[in-house]
Image (cartoon, rainbow, N blue to C red; front, side, top):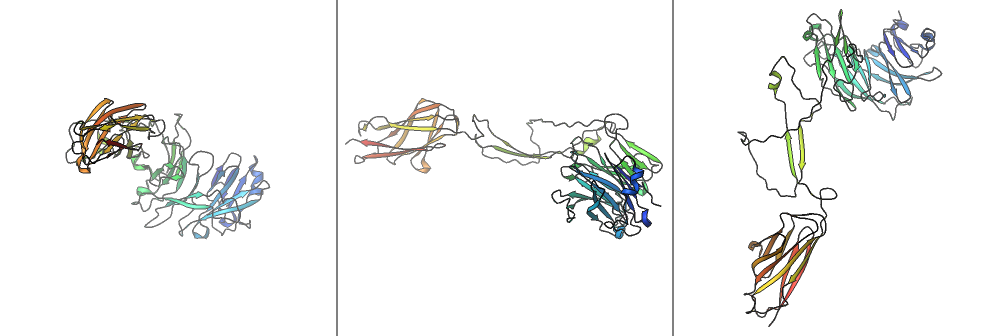
Length: 488
């Protein structure tokens, strides 16, 4: 009547055996840490007689067992799906002397849901430490026996204290197809090996009563810190063989059964065992291709924008794989987008800059302005010439500009270039202002530009003693005032 072995878990140096029929179906669990498990059966079993584990009769304690590892510590799990009519999972630890201490518990939320029917501990990242505890409630009901799987995460900083049982946190809830009311989702759960090559483990959940008792198996992919709650695959029994019944009542997927170096999935069915093999390798391909077209697409709007040579261009885009690609040739499988592919992108395009660090160049612009001649004799020499010399002793300078503000009684005449490239235009809207662009948007490092700016002095009155011209260079701002004395 003890029903020992109805559930079992085999660890590296221990084994667990559940006996839900012990003590009038209150249940018990056997822990074996020795080779002679028969000798240790009575010494290490516990159940209703343990003061720390007071189970009601017909609680079925030991219905499912498991274990998880955190560092050097091993914690044991045992479920009682009928305890208090809502189900319970106990977490306990045994020291070297064989003393057992309950470290925590997790309880169901609905009467008759059979919370704890299946336990599954998942090491998502494969580092040897357990990350998630999955507890099934296959009889969870809304319209029928839909079933659920509860995913609990673990707070390592508080676990291990007998006085603190709040270390388990409900992290996620997995469910089957919303249109299936009698699937009993969660009748079987197992951790799978990495199926998609992302380095994270997957989980398979059986729903043996789905589709009129033919059954189905759901595959949930792992992600850092948890699972994707949307199943990546839904494997229906009717798509494999119409004669299968209760497909998904048991699931296991860590062994390579056909020696192809790929993990296979074994799925139990009524009278059959189905093995799903992954025969095709998965290659992750990232294609980068730019296309040019002279024909614009009809029905799309365009937008013009002003850009310059030093401001980065921000590009946003998205892409998708057309549905028609899946029907090109039904005989051959087509490429598909991975579930981890980002369909939206944002990029910043910058013009290449000859800078030592980052994208900001440290130029060093030095400006010198000199009047050509000491005096201007009105009526004899009606031209005022200024020699401008701009030198860059630092890194490349982008879009350097020179701005000269001159009095109203001077008129801009022309520029005379001596070295380098300069373009100057008067800006009458801003008053007497001359704006010059140095170079072809870029002034290279260790280069110099020299030119002369000529003004007409025909409107200068004889009483004028001083003419003030302000010269400013952007990027490295340099302000220099030039005083020209007029002789009487």
